Image 1 (tube, rainbow, N blue to C red):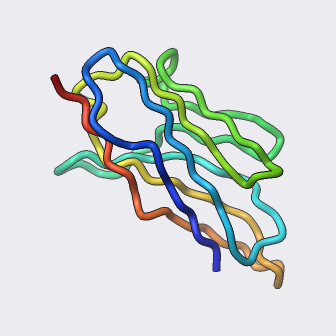
Image 2: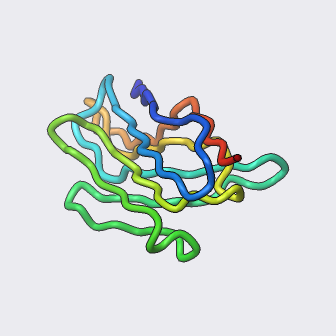
Length: 120
């Protein structure tokens, strides 16, 4: 099994910034895609950003210019830097990771989620 531990959420004022982090541990031999998704109350979970092992990023169009995703492969950690936050960014943010375990089986894992609230 692969465990993902997220941190960095919290309450921030509009226009502020937050940096989320997510570290993977457990039984895996490769970690290809890592990324972030979010789910606001009453809405479906949606893509925020993803990054491959090689560093190729994919950021939701609506968030481009305000969000940066990066990862440190040696630490199995992915970061999400969010700037100029708006109240509509309020959501639970979930880390996602995909790769292969020691049996070479593909896996996809989710973190427990971290709450981000943007409010004055």
